Length: 239
Image (tube, rainbow, N blue to C red):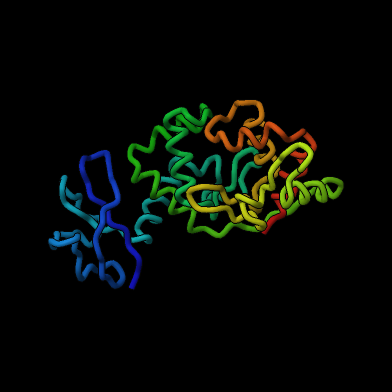
């Protein structure tokens, strides 16, 4: 059996998760029921459902749809597969899908300020588009990174794993895990991320430029420049 997602369509530009039990092999649906009543389902994305109807989207088709969008919209800055492009832009390979969707929503709304990304996110007309793109990148395996500054790596490890008691900086590992894997939907996967990008985001949080996480604003406000640079470099080598 393969896990597949169910969406109930309320209008052309909205999609929300719906309950139900699906028994399926590959993309063929054998049974679909809500709490009490059987309901009609489409077994592929070829036919557009009408409001009130239900269709089935497999993880595989989410990724395929996301690849088509990513190639057109995202590839120029993030590389075709979300891998190691320009260090000023984040590596997206292996990032949690829920986290990516949240960031795209907040770029689009302006909650996370970035003129370029706001324009890019605006081209994603529906939440389904965002979920497709996120599924595509989340399915990729990120290539290992490495730390560059031997003089700072010990400090970076100390702050990342244990924080700074004197300045009340909490350990990064408490939320992002010891190996930088993070927690889906809540905390980003950091392991192997470009040091340049991580440093710029921590600085942005500290300066109030990036405002879409009160928690991270509070953490970064207690970090000095050397700690930020050290943590960013240490994160780049996590795997």
